[in-house]
View 1 (tube, rainbow, N blue to C red):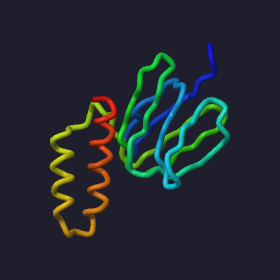
View 2 (cartoon, rainbow, N blue to C red):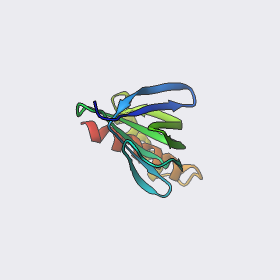
View 3 (cartoon, rainbow, N blue to C red):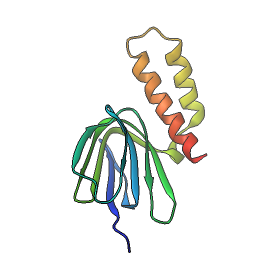
Length: 128
């Protein structure tokens, strides 16, 4: 069996997913990063977006994450997000309404609300 990554995706309120993976792709404040077995240790700040966990058999787990951190060391990937939702948990109509509302709002929180909605829609589109 090939080396695999031991991945744990945790939100502030729950464990979202854990298991083995062949690759993890995430967006950090420094840009997109792909993690393969043997990757050098790293600590990154997550940007609102989709995390893709590619399992050895080809299956993918996709989640929308909102803020948090990604750490890699010794083939262990820890993703600690402020909020995280698996793609299949996302209510697309609700996310679209949130994006529309944020786009037409002049509230101070509107840009962050729009980013969260866009992350949800992107994560859902990756599995749909």
